[in-house]
Structures are given as C-alpha cells and as structure tokens.
Image (cartoon, rainbow, N blue to C red):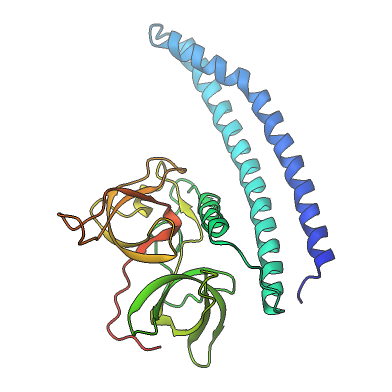
Length: 288
C-alpha cells in the first residue's frame, strides 16, 4: 500500500533517530578502542627488536582483542549504512508516487547533472566479508538474466531518434509489463520528456552498489576493456576504453571515449563514476 506523505515523513524521522543513535555508538566505540590500537602499534615496534615469548604472547592477545573490536565496529557501521539506504528507499518511493500521480518534478539541466553526480557518489558501497561473493549489479558484475529492474531504477536504454538513429540514453524505469516482456522508461533528460516502450534486450540495469577497489577489485572492469560510459555533462552512453581503474572507493574510472575528431580516435582521459560504466550490450537482434 502506498505511503502517505505523513507516513513517509514519520518513517524517515524514525530512521534518522536510529541513525543518530548508531553514529553516537560508533563514535563511543572508536574512543573505547583507540587506546588498544595505540598500545598495539607501540608493542609492534618493540617486538621488532624484542622477540621474547612473553611479549609475543601479549601482542597476540592485543591483536585478538583488536580483531573483535573491529568486527563490532564494522557491524555498527553496516547498521548505520542500512538505515541510510532505508531513508533513500522511502524518499524514492514517494518520488515515484508523485510522478505516477502526475506531479513529476521539473529539474533544470545544471541541477540534473549535479543530482546524477551525487547519486553516483552516494551509491551504497559493497565491502565483502572474507570469502563472500560479490553480488550482481555491484560494480562491473551484471544483473542475472532473469533480473527485472524496478520502478525508479536507473538504466541504460537503447532508443531510436526521429531520424532513426539509435542511441544509449540514461533512463528511469516506470514499469515492466510481464505479459509483453517490455519496459516503459522515461528519458532522464527533462528537455526530452520522452517515454519509451522497449524490450528487455534494449535495457541494461545500472549498478545498485559500488565495488570497493581495496577489497573487491575483481568487480571492476580491467584496464583496456571496451565499455559503455556516460559522457560527462550529458545523459548519453558512448563506447570507451578503461584507461585507469579507481584505487579507492571514492575514485572514478579514467576512460578514453571513442572520438574520430582526435588523431588517435580517442578523447583525452575523462572521469566517469562506477555507476555509469557498464558492459557493452551485445544485441543479436533488437526490437522496440
């Protein structure tokens, strides 16, 4: 059942209250474990010269305590991130309800570009636990073949212009009709205001999570891979080659876009967020 504006506001307030409590708890936990970390560093330096069994035993004990502290802090941080995602989901649900009711918000192009950047930067970060497999739609990992994008999800959509030219654009899912296996999507560009009905072959779901380069580098496109990437300050995807991978969770890919206007056929290096870099869609046959 759709949420009313009042219900949504109350749910967001409840999540914010829980989030504030978790942030305070995280800060308290960090202050509690800081002396142990300082002691661990101090003893590690001493142990490089002093190899006595007693010191090694003491250091192992401190390491074990530190490991348990880290696990506990990680659990709190993951809970806080889950609350943030809950808030995003509630707000997105209200936005979709408003759109379906005909109250779609008009966004200026400059504001749209900023919104897309913030959306990419704040996309949930997946940090795997030891032995955990990276899930679909995280970084470069594609969606399962049976996956159906949900209303409000961002996708790359292959559409035809009035001149018959095909382009990959950034779009938002309105709905999926299972009886026809087709999506209805809106062009994210407010200046176009176009709605398209497209087969699943013409849709590529965008990542729902960022991959952490420091723990899940296998979920990033290797250097030299040909991909589709959103050209900066536009809402269109073009072919590009991965030139450099992000080294941290906050960094972007460095890509070279195919561009015949340059002598070597590629643009100078440009930066594109993980969310807007996807595998090339191989269409044997596309239909609207």
